[in-house]
Image 1 (cartoon, rainbow, N blue to C red):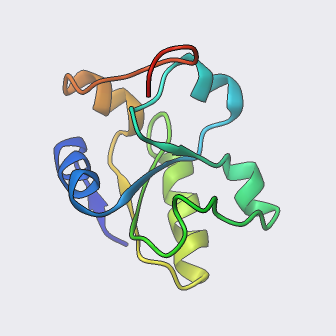
Image 2 (cartoon, one colour):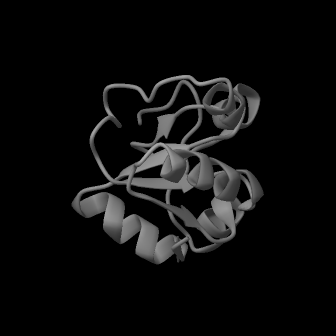
Length: 107
């Protein structure tokens, strides 16, 4: 399964793909990448569909450190979707200096 650095993920999501954040609600609310779409891994495991904003588009999956995103990417790949995940997750995204927004902020 393909893995991207945060810089590669940002480039891909600027172009065509959707950044899919699979952390649980509390972590999402504390801070996520602007423009990301939220679907907790627990929902995907339970069979939840992707939201309309992510349907039919390539997916770049992210979590806090990369463990859950790998699991989500494998699950979504098994559903026949075009999926890669981000090495180092939001920890690496933030360390790379990329924007993070929290609930109540724009994005």
